[in-house]
Length: 144
Image (tube, helix red, strand yellow):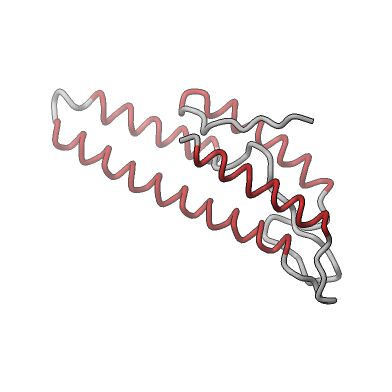
């Protein structure tokens, strides 16, 4: 089955893309033996392997708020150019920090999925799913 690796959606399309991604993620979570926070090592459960196009899309409410603030900064440029640029700088700082958090969370989840279990073994299927997740994240980042 061919996979598509979408780029991070633009803020305008973000709500629909996020909702679709969240729906896909919930479906994947329902079939996973663990959670995104990881349960490896506890009763043999395997954490959810996030490998769909859900990364690194912010929740719709966060995307909408950041997009609203950006529109406000851009529209305020004529009257207060310095304030507008300072707001844009703050937005970029906030967004890059949030994306860094999402990347760190995704990496933790992926690492938990392929680490050795209590018996000191790792299933090939766990490694395959982890590789798929890493590939998805890296492809998305490289497409930016």
